[in-house]
Amino acid sequence: MIGAHDLGGKRGFGCVLPASNANAQGSDLVEPLFHAEWERRAFALTLAAGMLGQWNIDESRHARENQAPQRYLDNSYYETWLVGLQKLLHEKGMLEREELAALPFAASVDISASASKPQRGRPITEAPTPAKAAALLTRGGPTLLPDSRKPKYALGALVKVLPMTQAGHTRAPEYVHGARGIIHAINGVHIYPDANAHRRDEDRIVGETLYTVSFARAALFPQRASCGDGAETASAKKILKSESTNQEDRVIKESCEDRVFVDLWEPYLTHD
Image 1 (cartoon, rainbow, N blue to C red):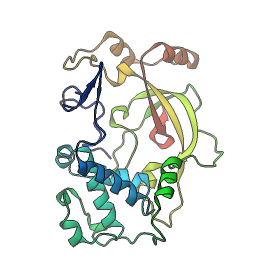
Image 2 (cartoon, rainbow, N blue to C red):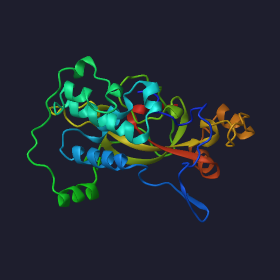
Image 3 (spheres, rainbow, N blue to C red):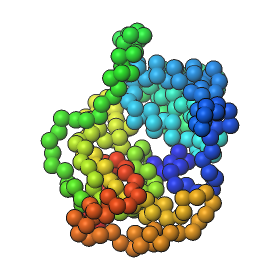
């Protein structure tokens, strides 16, 4: 979905500045992990609830990003985590509407018509012990699937990213929509987040081939790197006109320029 959460390459927000309460250590600025005790609790609560097995990581991401744009921008990082958690707890039938209304940031939680009647989650057999929780965090959530399908695009192929207009979850950042790039790596078949974010328990897991696509930095961000300078560079104008048509030339070209590498699933791409 296109929304306020997708900030990559957006203008009007000014330069990225270090946190005002960062601690100077030599020449580096180190931001604290948590700015207040409630952030530490929000972090722990989100991880603990996720270990109950009622939702997957793509559902969790979609719950956080699916807010009204102004509310999303007004929230701090962990406020957005709490909004997403409260939404998921309600959708899975673990939090009643009345309970939700009494919680902080409840106004930011969008309870759609489909979620007005909570979908009961899977039975919870037991909460993980601290040892099991540590093991879960260490293992992570692998997404690679045992699928030997042939990829649609070969290494060095020139591709174009399709525009993303659907309302659901996607991992294709808006700054690459419509952009032309080169297949840099083929990473196997991975769980497709666009489907996984909306998957019911009875649905099969959908996998799609995952590529690393290389883009000319100047083509994605033609403005100069310095904040506030909107002039296009000569190299940006040249790259915007065309990419090399010869595959070998493209590989050489890729190694000689500033590039941006983005992991993109096959349905995001088309031949150019």
